[in-house]
Length: 294
Image (cartoon, rainbow, N blue to C red; front, side, top):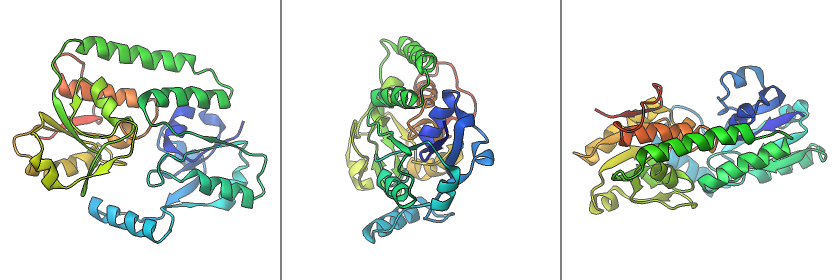
């Protein structure tokens, strides 16, 4: 089966299921399994450009959306050449990845009517795991061993944190302007032993002002998890956040890998954040996942 994954989370899942060798097309953001972009054609790229600040990215996204312009460019001829049997896409967020309607329209234009389209659209953590199983079924692959490992690790974290006091955590999914988290992110914090003080379970992230944040009750900790940024990028943005919230511990995490990408490594993110919030109860994660700003 020839698989075109137009969603980084799906690429990660395909790899975790042992089907990476069947990938024939990926996106510019697909970096897991490691090296996948070096051997598989990239058919989706960003239309935003590079080197912008978070505020500039937010402005550019809003401008393009208002003008009806795409945020991602699909190389239709490269997709045709890849000759996929199945294309994995999404309709959860037009900012986070190429929207599914663009893919289905392109397949129709290319005359690829026999290509199956699988949409991966989880809103909650349980839907991430269910969606993983659904994708595995579409690829005729057994997800049992992978899911058993993930659930076993989740149970281990829950056991380690049972009965412990939960710090109140302000989560920022973007910092300029600040966005409060949605979808599965608040639940990740709960599973890591924290209590998110804002956000929308299963819904979209919400923009707020720093004035609103300052007027709300002071949190015990702040989690900086800017969408699409690695740990270094999150740490860079944690500095200005710490200045606005003096005296509050600030934790940064590799959001692109462990928070906003709805793949198996969400469990890695839960483990890393659980250590950040409860360092005496949960083992430290490998370097590069999560760090406190000092």
